[in-house]
Length: 350
Image 1: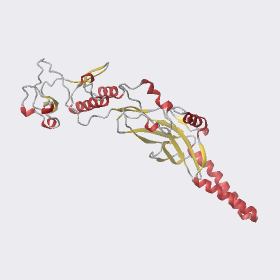
Image 2: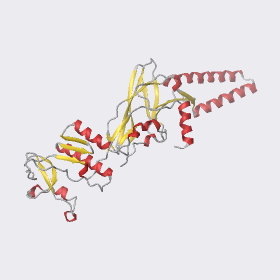
Image 3: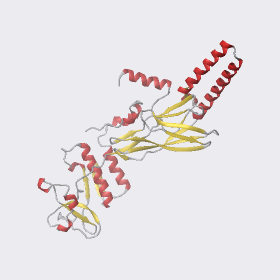
Image 4: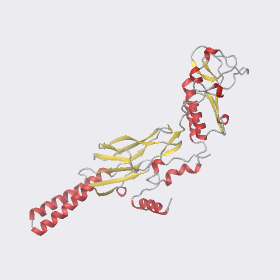
């Protein structure tokens, strides 16, 4: 971060109170709401100046009356514009985990505890080219909206700084405030599009063979000598070339001793890219879930026994999302600039 950028951040922190992430509910007090003339307001001000000068030069009493009337209207507008934003209570909800490449949704709760309706409140991120949400909030009421951020990498995705602004009622003034909630979304690795068959451990009888039942389809495994040809999974075989070293694939059906699915990261080819290995593990977890197969999970010190439930799935995917993530990046949102925060994710290293 260069010196000019640091000075800019310090200036915005001192003038506009853009500080570090804030946890819990935030109240937009008077010192957090800023007002400046809009473009229409600047033209309006120039018109008042010209009207006043013309009335002075030509001694037009009607012109003075019009000038004072329009000036008073501008003063009243300033009061209503400020009150339309001041003393709102803001709170950020919990964002649900997503997969890399998906859109993260951050729920924002807007609570109006005053007996004054708030109109045309604009919510968006301070970064450029972001979608703007416009909401009205009735007196003594609350509104919830969801701000969206595109994810690109696994890890934690911090919410960008939020800008709240309004031009109500006449559009002559712009009142605004900014807020950086202390919240982030967990981003899982992107599942591999066409992963290999699920890895299955040997059967409990120690023969290394798996006897298939003939009931519901429950998954696939590598072909083993003695498997009936009618159980070959031609759909999966078509994706590989046996002549080039690809494996034949056999279907598994419920009602047979299938063995257990063991997802061991150490068993993957270390020559593969790290992110590809994590994506493959993610895809295997989702496939085992779809097929109703209990699966174990091993990842450098993490060893979960075979299970099939939401808690097990969440624990495994979270371990993959945070694998080899720099621990110092947990404070990433504390030092993010307004221009780059929407694109800032946790660093991934090996």
